[in-house]
Length: 98
Image (cartoon, rainbow, N blue to C red; front, side, top):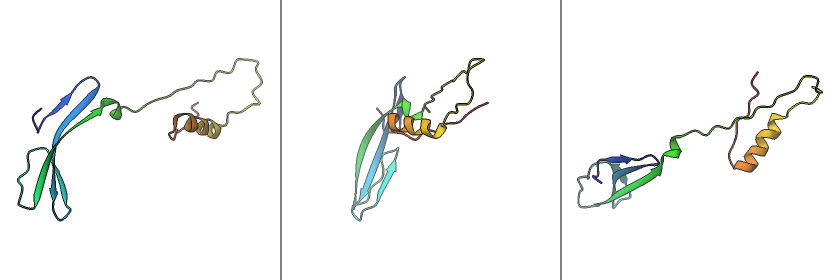
């Protein structure tokens, strides 16, 4: 793959890039091969990331109440959010929509 290009497939994106390290500790990133002075060294990297990183997951639930059922019960959305956080390992924003 050419250093300045990216390759996109149905499941991943691959980037070509360069890191330039300076002896004093500085680091810079470029898409093209960098010009270096005597105190710098460069490293070419190829980074492949799944396309799923750019997709926002969505989870929906629908609760239907049948006519004639006891409506005195309520849904604790905080408990639902905590249960989802425990199961999925991520914070979940739970909303009640009319």
